Structure formats: C-alpha cells, structure tokens
Length: 257
Image 1 (cartoon, rainbow, N blue to C red):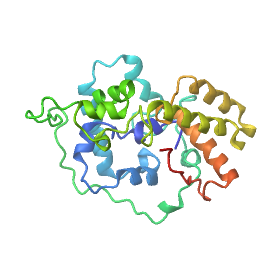
Image 2: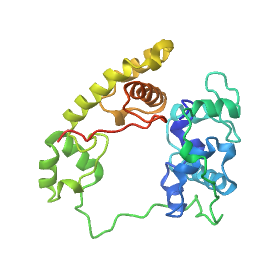
Image 3: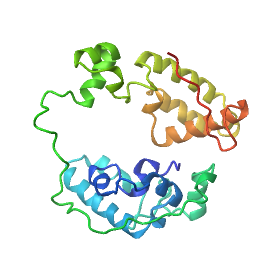
C-alpha cells in the first residue's frame, strides 16, 4: 500500500465509527479500497459517505492540536486527490499504482459496486450507541489489554471470570502470544527483514526503517511508511527463501505454543 496515503484509507475517514455504522454488513469495503486504490476512483456514494464521515470527525475532534488535524492535508488536496507530501504535486494514476505494487491478481475479476443508498445519518447529530446500562462492571478492551501486559493472559482472564479465548488480541499480544513472546517473535522477523534483498539498492529506505524500529516492539506497532517498507522487504525475503507464493503471500507457521 502506498507510503503516501495508506494510513488514511484513501481519505474516506472509514476509521470513524460514523463511517462504519453507515455501511451495510455485507459491503466489502476493504476490497473496494484495494481495487480502486485512489479516492478519485471510488464510486460516488462512497465519496459522499466519506465527506459526511469527515464532517462528523471534524465535529467530534475539533479540539485536536492543529499539527495533527492538518497532517492529512499533506496527503490530499481539497478534492480528495492523492498528493506526494514531499512535493505537494498530485500523484498520477501510474504513480499511485506503482505505490501499490506488487499487484493482487485475485482482484482482477472483482467488480466494484457502489453503496445502494445515499440515505446516511446526519453527521451533526449522530452518536455511537452507548454501552448497555446493565453491564456497568464489564471491563473495557483497554483495561483487559493493560492487565494482559502486566499480569499475563491467564491472570487477566481469572480476574474477570473470562475464558482466555474471550480476551482481546490487540497491540500487546500477537497471534495468541504474550508480550515477551511477541517481542521475541518480531525480533526474528526484523532480523530477516533487515537482511532482505529488497534493500540491495534501497539503503535510504533501510535507514528509515531502522530509525522507526527503534520505537517498535511488535509488528502491530508499525504503521504508515514503516509498515509499508517492512512488508515489502519481508515479501522479498520470503520469496527468496521460498516461504511465499508468487504474489508475496506468506505461508505462516503456527505460533509457538
């Protein structure tokens, strides 16, 4: 995915509760975004919903520091077209497609369909549903994740009378491993990635990734440019080692028990 705008899901504001709540349950938004690859290629109703989601986001987070609120302006112009943040120039279709390499042949036959309606909730008044009042003592996901980190999954489950499979898998766990196991597992991946043939003529990208990795403990901590470089390098490494198919899809091993 593009290092320019992957974090923002093609400027759709689909990371907002408002956007998600307006989607039909069976609408394949992830595949649509991957197929279109650029905001200007999205179907009209998705664009309309995106504008409303941005309106909702701006209302709810009007107090966000300007340095954060304006960051997305480096990646999109007023019409939603993708920009190169280094030059401010609008990216061409060819430049956008290049950033999405390697291509995903499984999308060739996929036909994008628009949302069936333009009847969306008013972003100036819409609010997410509140948690049920009869569950006041239910631990939040954040509480559970903190307890998993500090006490381990078993103790966290015992504390709230939950089974371990009811606990969330989040930024502090990885494929069912606890934090220390996840760190060790990720460290092995990092070692292979840094030796990847992808960096044979990309020393600048390797240096960028090294700097980002200084503050990253597990894969889930990666995002934006760091995640993009890591994924490309790992795909190249796996292909060389024969651990991936011709499209770079990894043959994952089962995590350690």
